[in-house]
Amino acid sequence: MLMSRYDLLVKGGLLVLPYHGEVRADLAVRGGRIVAVGEDLPASDAEEVLDATGKAVMPGAVDAHFHLGIYRDLGVDAAEETRSSLVGGATTVLSYFRTGQHYLNRTGPYEEIFPEVLAAVAGRSYTDYGFHLAPMTVGQIDEIPALVTEHGVTSFKYYMFYKGFDLAANSRDAQAFTMGDEYDLGHLYLIMEKLAAVQAAHPDRRLSLSLHCEQSELMRVFIDRIQRSGRPQNLRAYHEGRPPLTEEVAIAEATTLAGHAGTNVNLLHLSSADAVRAARTARAQHGTDMRLEVTLHHLCLDVDELDARGGLGAKVNPPIRTRADNDYLWERVADGTVDWVASDHACCMEEHKGDELWPARPGFGGTALLYPVLLSEGHRRRGIPLSRIAEAVSANPARAYGLWGRKGGLAVGFDADFTIVDLELEREVTTDMLLSGQDHCPFEGVTVTGWPVATVVGGRLAYTLDKGVIGEPSGTYLHRGR
Ligand SMILES: [Zn+2]
Image (tube, rainbow, N blue to C red; front, side):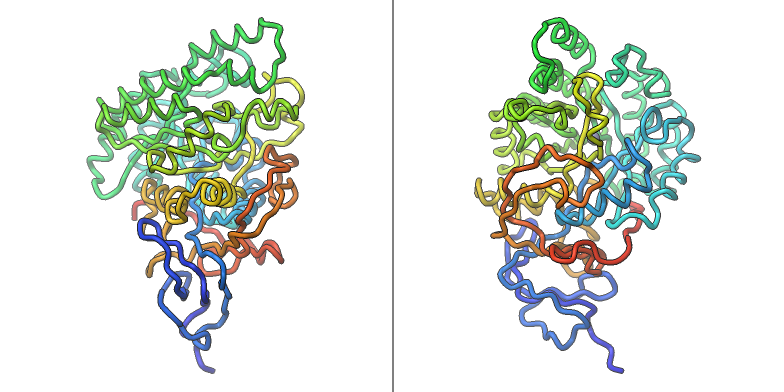
């Protein structure tokens, strides 16, 4: 029997190449990788052919902000939420994990806990996956060198707003929540110092600290005021209880420390115009490597529209802001100030939202809408070039998190992770079509134009719009830095 040269051939598509532009070419895959890009590659050379005529072929999205297992069993989340990623053309997810309440509801050394996390997800993820870890104890800070070298974890996290204030329980006992040590700017500085030292020993890779920037002492005052005011306790109240000022101050604090320690940082989910302006100023001032992230919900959702519809499904930290903030964020995505867009996907069921604002759990899913929303609202409506879109959801996060060369591009040698998109396909968002375990969706009813019709992970057709998910989960753990 004659062996085919290629396992898979994508014919006639418009390839979207980050940092380059668009070319009409065929793309060939063998052994899970891209092995050829060229004109008129013969179909007879391939085992399987996908016709992409009239469609765009985008590098698979690297959804760099995810929360597998935050509110549900880690294995169930891995299966159902990465399945949802395929619908939106994401082929890699990088998930945050920490010890303390939610997740596994325990603390201890990552040496013990991280292998359990990996075992729970192994064989269940439809996308390739990696983890960012948050050191909640001083002991865990000491584990950073081993996490880098043994487990290939190159990114870590600190939550500015946990200090002294546990909003989940509406109490002031942060330690009951984090199950960790004193969690304050001192702890943050220790993490930064350690990371900078480990970075010096590994100049070949980018080690970074991701920061959730909201200032808890200001939140305490603003939330008290809102709760006493007698006004409706809705999403607008939530936005005003954690206003953009709290982001600005936290950004100033964290980036001042990062500048002194010499640590690379990622400023996560900047939600407001004020936050992005503060981040841009800090980046210019401190000269350290600083990357800016926004989420698709902060780009697209408007707090007053959500309140007019009612419900608390869109409660999230930082809160959903205003239409003016949406517009400002889109401009900064377009001009490249913002490095990447992620979903901050956290599967949170309706029963955990309820009808009371303060006890409602924060977060919701959105991974299935990453490319669709960027293509519809960013490319189609605002004229952002397709290559810039691919940079914002794929290439830039891949570079920041040690995956470039494997993920983020459509070049020979890269993993064959891509999605074929029908830029003209219009669909109204429903909860069901996203294939997530979550039973509601804050984007429900929004009309989006531009949807993946096929998603390929590691050279294998894993999803089509017509058939849904195909085959078993085949995602592998990404040891970063090798
Ligand atoms: Zn998050």
